[in-house]
Image 1: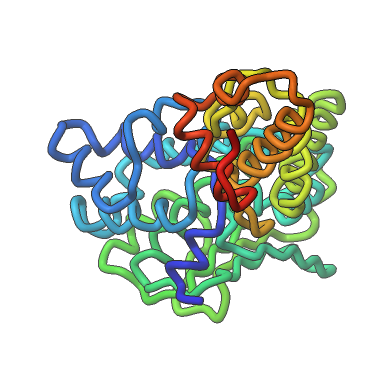
Image 2: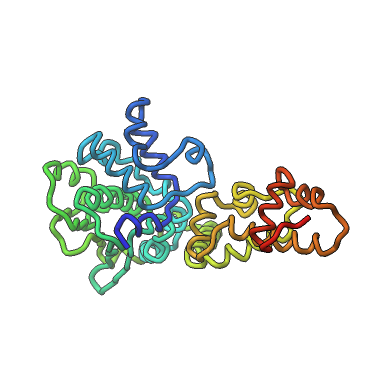
Length: 333
């Protein structure tokens, strides 16, 4: 499988995509340039339940880099504030202490950035988050993504501790850029390049320091939501069962994919992707349900051919006849 195919099958929430587009796509021309090749439509952008693939996000990163040049991530560091991380940001901020916060980030990172594997290692002297991409990324992408991630970490830790984390170490697994001084000024910690791993580290003696925003109730609720998000990512067959039940109970009118996705609380793209992970498509499931209903209604003998076609949501009896030939191998009168 190619890198593009792997990225296309890795889901991501839409938040950062919208944020980058709004900030840098401030004219119709720039907006079009940032969306080029992403396959994103205005309808999907406006859907609050929609998500994207990692491939679409990487294409957007490439487009902004081409439009604005490397270092565009530093144009406004507040863009990468921890509040922009949804439930993950809430859970990390409201954890009892910094050590627990970093554990949360490692465990639940797939819910925000599915293209990375994040591990947390803690020794007597320090704790470290290592970021390993699940697919090879070129250096401009790695650098931009690392800058975003490290500015997020700076924001989060500064808020938890109530001061900028001057003791933090930020290691980039890429060459030092010409604008490295701007990176160091934004992060205010120890910044190095050409490291074996992309990593963020803090001295361990800060890990038991209580978070200024520790909130047991809010933390528990955010973790519950993150657990549900992980289940949705790792159990594609669960959604198929939900779709099957929905189709079994659908009314006489035909249920389309958009309506089914809305009923299940996911975007249409997510529905398609997660069914595909289980080796099936929505049309295939719908067709199977219609076939079962058609056989039952035909065997009952209580309705005419035209009435059955109407009950199953076909535009006309001819369309239903074609379906019957496909299902049963002969025309049904």
